[in-house]
Structure formats: structure tokens, C-alpha cells
Image (cartoon, rainbow, N blue to C red; front, side, top):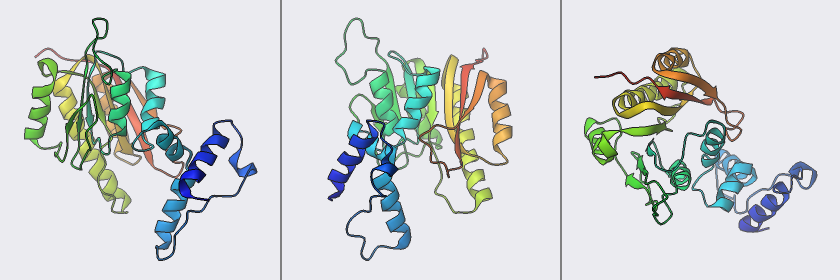
Length: 251
């Protein structure tokens, strides 16, 4: 069965709440000859992943869109008229969700409040209609953050998202330290730009440093929660921390 048709078939089955395992065994992609075992496992996992299938069906660039969709469904953090910064945005699926929720992909009307979505990443991000994309830009550099501030109305944001992650080394402590460094950078930026009652959402890898960071968020936001979206793979250590109601201090 060609790969594309396999995707269509699996989505057809799953969209009707039929247990896929009762219908057929795991789908194996074609043309695996010459590929390493890890590549074969990755391709097979992708082909059988519910959220990979759904992301293709709905036009999202990757499966992580459904993590943000689930979080927003519960906490209602995205709506028209807001200013949103998406850090670590590549390939752009979170920004796609933001654009859709803020209705930035629609023609402006008198009734539609105009918001803004800014996507930034060290990697290449293809253009996203309705968003300002700062591709191949290092977020942690002061000049990049100043550029973002200059694009925000009055230099302020309602929501800062961070899906940033370092390149994994496979060494847990090193990887955890690296991602905590990134989220602290995102938080420091958020403290500078968030409006009162603003929202900060970030990804971390569960580890010894997370509790301290969680407590830092508690000192800055009215409500802080840990989230493990259904779209996160069960063997992944990633969790998301959300701070709602930024306690902005007068300068």
C-alpha cells in the first residue's frame, strides 16, 4: 500500500473511533532497504502515529500543533486581538495554531480585533500567512529580542510561548541543564514584555531543575500548572509549564 494511501486509510479508521489494532497490524513503510535500524523505527513510528496522521490531514507542519491545541482548549490563552510571541517556532506548527486562533489568516474587519503573531527560531521557518517570521534568528541574543520588542505594539505581549529545545546529547543532566537555560532566557524576556495578567507557556524536560523553575513561575504568576498533553509521546520526558496572570510590577 503506498504511504499516502496508508495515511488516508489510518485516518479514516481512527476518525471513526475504531481501534486500529483490531483492524490491521502496524503499517510498515516501503523502501526501507539500506536505512539504519533507528531510521526504520522512526519511519514506522511516524507512519503509525495518530498525531502525525492528523497533522497532515489538517495541514499542520508537525504533530506538536495538537499539544498547543489541547492546552488552549483547556486554558483559553489564545484569542483575536492578542500579541503572541512564539519562541523556538520551527517548523511553524504552533505559529499556525496561533494565527488560526487569532484569526490573522482572515481579512480584517471592523469587528475583528487585530492581533499579532511573531515566530522566531534559529532554524529555517518557511513563511506563514498572517505571522511575522524571524527565521534563522537566535532568540537568546539581545539584538533578536530587541527586534521582537520593536515589532510588538507598545513593546508588549499578551502571551509568550517557548517550545525551544537544545539538540539532545543523550546525557540526561546535560540536556536538562541546556533546556532550563533556554526557558530561563524565555522567562527573562517575558518579564520584560508581558502585559499584566499575561501568559507564559514553555516546554521543559522533566528533571531535577524543573521544580526550582516551577517555584520561580509561582512567584511571578497567579496560576501555574504542569501539563502533559495527550499528544506528547508516552516515552517522552517533556512536560509543559504554564503561568497565567502575570504579576507585572510597576517600574
